[in-house]
Structure formats: structure tokens, C-alpha cells
Length: 379
Image (cartoon, rainbow, N blue to C red; front, side, top):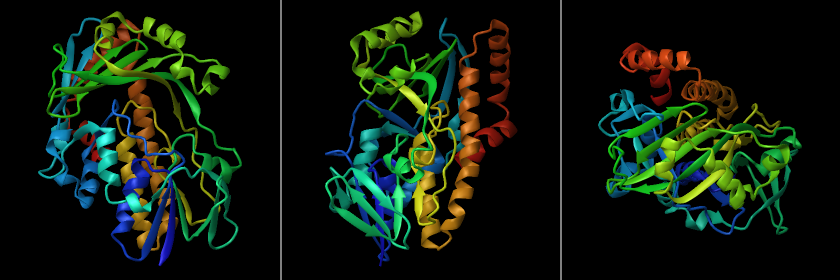
């Protein structure tokens, strides 16, 4: 029986653990540095059909219908006047069993961990990784060690495990944007059945339903320069003066939503600079530890799930040497679209905005373009 250690109990780590749990040839242990798994309520996620199809293999299709939602389209608006530009029918990519899905992150994590409780160890912060021998030896700050055949690292964009292996050569970079997020209940001016995307100069925000009860997720991405010291300040998001300064710079038309937001949080967006392949072929990264995208293509969770599934299949078939190259190829495609979306969403030149809006109206109805731009990701 092969022993597998998974570092990090986020979406990708929990999903791949569920896959291995179904195969008696593997024994899994999940190590989480925190005292409990993060179940923050005020955080919605979007799952495109590529990830829903994979989640259905562990019976996500039987997950409670009152805790998830299937929007049909994305409505594009201008922030300044709330004028609707056009709409994109994302349900065109759905199948009968796999539909574009939105829900709370906490509900998805609860679903993923329900059959893994005995395999999760909390308060395990990694301190060293010995990867020189055939079996990998992992050491923790509580002085415990664990030897495994495979080490799967899924501890996020600030992966301590990646730092240990790369000797701090691979660091995320600040994306020059802040994310503002929270929950809204029953907003009167918002379509509670679809995804509403509002575009403005150096700023965009998205509001979408996360269940059939009228609960909405709010996420805004705002261009903002931080000093080097501010980027290193992990308590910046709790600084009341910082929060006030940011909210004062939010477009006037968006501020009407801020009063309705519960659990409002602001945090800097960090993304990956490049890829890192460990020398040991039995050590792998998934999720944000593999690569973190700008959040303007709503593919973070879906690519974490997709990458975890690819690694599982590669290990199961003894072709894990193919994983890195294949995942890099798909990741580059998603990353380029994410960066392009952010650029287009944040245009400030009036002529460029005019041309963008005309192009959007045409492209959202162009099936060939949609199949190339979205279909290659969603399917």
C-alpha cells in the first residue's frame, strides 16, 4: 500500500484525498497547519462545468440543492450608469448532469471533508522535507515525522512547503489589486438569478447568487498600489484606517452595495510568477500552491479541482511524470485569459471602453469565439 501525505486541507487537497480514498492501494493522511479547517462563511465560489463533472464522481450531484445555484448567464454592466452592455449565456456549456454552479466555499469544503475526518490532522505545521531518498520524510514543528511514497502539496499561494523545497526561490507577487468581498442578502437592484458583472476604470465588481434563498456573493477587484511594507503586513486587512481609505476610493455607484454587505473583508491579491518542478518526481503541487491566477476569470476553484483530478489519474496509472507538463499548458491558457479579462474590465480610456462594449456585444453571440475562449476551459 502506497502512503500519501497531503499538505493543506483546502479544496484541492480535500478533493484529491476523496479520490484516493476510493482506491484501497493508497493510504492518505492530510496535514493542516491550523487548529481547524477554514470554513469562512462570507466567501462564494463559481464552479464551471469542467469541475462539476469531476466533483460528481464523488457524488456532488447529490449535494443539497438549497445550498447551491445554477445561474444561466452573465450580465455585463457599466458601473457608472448601471447600463447593461450585453449578456453571455453560460448555460450553453451545461449538460444534464453538469451545470455551471455557484455556492459558498464553506459548503463545498464541508461536503469534501465529510468522509475524511479520520484522515485529517490539524495543528501540523511543516518544518522540513527530506526528498533525497526514495521515500520522502516530512517533519513538523511538533517534532513528529512521517515517511511517505508521495507528497502532495496544496497549502496555498503562500506555500511554506514550496518555500522549503525551492529554498525560497519561488515567491508570489502582489498583483497591484485588492479584493473586497462579502455577502449580500436579497439585494433589490440585482438580478438574483444570474451573475452581474459591473465594469469601471481600474475597478470591477461581481455579484452572484450562491443559493436559491436570495443570498448573493459580492467580490470587487480594485487596482491599488501597496508599499513593500504593506504587502508584507498580514494584519493590514484588519487595519480600520486602511479599510476606510480603500472604501473611500470605491466608485460612488458601488458604495450603495457596501452598506448591505455582511462580513466585508479586504485583502491584497497575490498571484504566481512562474512554475516550479521539484527534483523528486513523487512530490507534486496542486491548487494555488501549483499556480495562483488573477481572480478575473473565476477559475481558481475549478482549476484546483481539475489539477487534483489530473494528478490522481497520473499517479494511479503510474504516469505522474506527465502531470507537470500537461498542467502547465492548461494553466498558462487560464492565466492568460485571467490577465486579459482584468485588463479589459478595467479600461479607463473612453474610446477604448466604447470599442470594448461594441466587441463584447458581438463576441458573446459568436459561438466560434465562445467555444475557443470558454469552451477550451470549461470542457
